[in-house]
Amino acid sequence: MTTDPLFDLQDRVAIVTGGSGQLGQVYIAGLVERGMRVASFDVSSGTVPEGARAFDVDITDRAAVERAVDGVVRELGVPQLLVNNAGLDSPPDAPADEVGPFEEYPEAAFDAVMDVNVKGTFLCCQIVGGQMAREGRGSIVNVSSVYGMLSPVQDLYEFRRAQGETFVKPVAYSVSKSAVLNLTRYLATYWARDGVRVNTLTLAGVWNDQAKEFLEAFGARSPMGRMLDAHEALGAVVFLASDASSYVTGSNVVVDGGWSAW
Ligand SMILES: NC(=O)c1ccc[n+]([C@@H]2O[C@H](COP(=O)([O-])OP(=O)(O)OC[C@H]3O[C@@H](n4cnc5c(N)ncnc54)[C@H](O)[C@@H]3O)[C@@H](O)[C@H]2O)c1
Image (cartoon, rainbow, N blue to C red; front, side, top):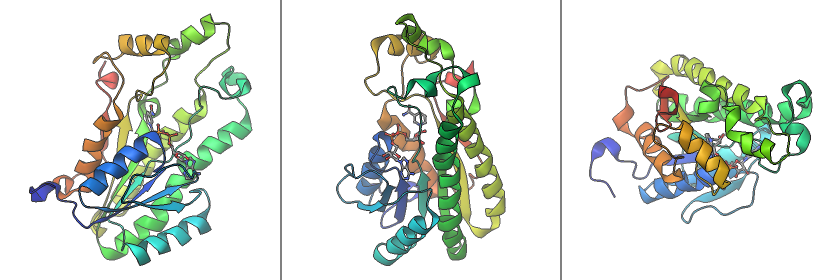
């Protein structure tokens, strides 16, 4: 698709975790379109874009990740790209006790989010990154959020409180996404001389037909006045996957419409 060797991804192998989700599908479609052989690791049997191979994997289960990586190596080859995109946030319909006051945030919810967002990312890095290091090449993209760099702005959810609900954006997501930033730095230096680059991709909130009041509050807080369109996250993944980023490691690529700039 591209004739520019800087961005050429033709015939390279990628694993995208959480490939059935909103952003995962965009990454997979974009990478397949650029000639990559892509595997999705997801617990959900949801759709995966055409041309990709779907593996049923819970990334918190080491044996399951190892089995799936063996399958990828056998069927597609040793991965050159790993996008650690699978993640748990609190969905809008999360049980009331998960979006209540910090003082009452349930330990089980904290563990569940940390398990997927931190341990799952760690396990995929360990198993896939180890293979990449033995091959002497690879790129890992760990997905974080502005909520991992900064506190959530609780005012964005005021409209829910105005409707009589208790709604506090929970703590575990922020803590887990901060951990991703330093897992990236740790591994970037650890594998720097083995040809494996590790970077964080930090995103602001993605448009997903949210409530009008939320979109207005978000727009008012955002320098660009709007949420991220899922397709706008792809360019950074292509950059980090390709030779265009050959000297980029340990960095945090921030795609947030200026959210963190003021
Ligand atoms: N959507 C946003 O506003 C936003 C903003 C900043 C960062 N992010 C990050 O981007 C990534 C993708 O977000 P999204 O909005 O596409 O989410 P999503 O919920 O649409 O997709 C996440 C996917 O991860 C999968 N998953 C969850 N637990 C898993 C497990 N244990 N093993 C394997 N797969 C698992 C889910 O089944 C789902 O398909 C997440 O890491 C998220 O934190 C999203």
